[in-house]
Structure formats: structure tokens, C-alpha cells
Image (cartoon, rainbow over all chains, first blue to last red; front, side):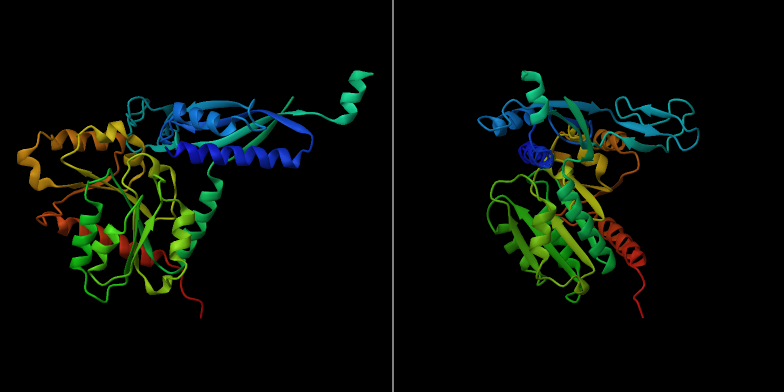
Length: 125
Length: 226
């Protein structure tokens, strides 16, 4: 259940971002999670909902992009998605390939609504 | 609506502290190893066997993590080396801040080797960098041989797999060949040693691996400024 601490870190980052943009309302936060990151999407969503309920972030949406395990072959330069842990190069058969993706646990973006007072005033007039 | 790109790690605070620890370990030539397994695979037993084999002047220390109790630290202190228990009080893994806090009153220049025994858990500890030079995963033959495929992340990230309790192989339905194949499939380059912490089988292979890594850590240490 380390998903709870991960959700906490995500919300901390969102709050820090909002602080830097006074008046803005965060609508969605996007994460990139690698297949090998040992993070369970359902558990993370559950923790995220539990932590945002009855807070100013209650309506914040959580976007999750799962990133597959990817390897690169240093021999032929081929980059490929690894199926069933077969990390052998699918083009040239080289078995010594390097992992280049699949371990992500990244904050990708926050979508914010900018509630500039002047813009709101212009709309209402 | 506007999208603000963030492009940073979710656990960037943990990673920042871990990077600081790693730099300190390198500066002082300390090899830090992070031991991870299910509860009951034999992390503490492996450390007991290891400490028991060391001469008393060996510059080694242990941080051992559990949710509750000082039991593991008490077991490991018998050998006369510095040992500290980290009780997480419910958290299922150790994080870099806990390591930093518990190392605060130890002098790294007095150490060559630091073992971190993580909380028994095959999932969560794999997400938290502790500044270690290598993760080591233990798998005991009383568990399923499909563990590497069920919990690929930790096997994928570990430099060494220690298969423990091999003395029980005649009595349990554990297929060693399948287990090794599963592990190699998830992590082709991972080194593997087979031991029995109870009987002592294979301890020489484990200690050989350890000495090899200790020597490598010393050569990585920057030359002292004169």
C-alpha cells in the first residue's frame, strides 16, 4: 500500500503548483507509470480518492498513462516494446539489450483553469 | 484551461535524498546494499550468517527495518557490529529519509559496508531508492517458483538474487530450474547464488560476490585530496 504515500506526493506537487499560480484551479493531474514501477493503478486511484475527498481538490481528476517495458538494442539501434519479458532484440536477435523505459513514476502535467479576475469581469459584462 | 508540463519524478523528494546518500557512500567508499524479500525468506538469517563469518574488526553496520519490534536488531547485535532498528510503525517499506535520519550519528568514514534490511515485502520497497549501490532480492524455496513473474519489478531491479533454504529442496515441491528460468526471463543479467542460511551451504558463493562488490566500491571512491 505504498500507493498512499505516492498519492500524497502527487497532491503535494499539485498544491505547490497551484500556490505558484494564485487564482488557478487544478482540474486534472497526469502521471506516467511504468509497467515495472510496482505501482497498482486501482490502489493508487483508491488512495487518491480517499485523500481528496472533502478537500479543495475533491474534483481533481487523475490521469494515468501506463508505460510498457521498452528496450533498445545497442547493436542495430532498434527500440521495441518487450512482450512477456523477452528482451532479445526482435530485429537482429541480440540478447544484450538495454532497458530504456518501463520504470517511470513521473508527474507529467497538471491541467489548471486560470481564473483571472479581469477575464471573469470581461465575461460578465 | 491550460496544461502545465511538470516532467519530474513523483518521488522526487525521496530521490533527492537518496542521491545525497549515494554521493556520501561513494565519497567514503561505503558499499551500501539493500536486501529485499517477502517476510520470512531469510534476510535476517543471511545477515546473521554473514556477520558471524566476519572478523571483529570488519567495518560493517546494519540498518534493519520492520513495521514493529526490535527483534531483528537484537538478533543481529549479538555479533558486536553496530546495528540499528528502524521501526516504520505501519509503513510497508523504508524510504531515503528514514535512512538519512538513522545514519545521522554514525560516521561513514568508519564503515566499508552497510547492509539495509528492508521491510519484508516484495512490492513497495522496489519503488524507493535508498541510495544503495545494489538491491539484492531473496527468494526462498518454500515460496512459489513463479515469484519473479508475479513480482517482476524487484527482480528486474536487483543485481543479485539469493535463493535461500536450498537444504529444504528435497522436501518441498519447488522446481529450482523453473524458478531460475523465471528470474532470468525477467532479468537476464541478474547474478544468482543458492544458499542455506541454516546449514551454511553456498555461503562461500555469497561471500565471494560480496567481496567482489566491496573491491569495486573501493575503486570507485574518489582519491583523497592531498
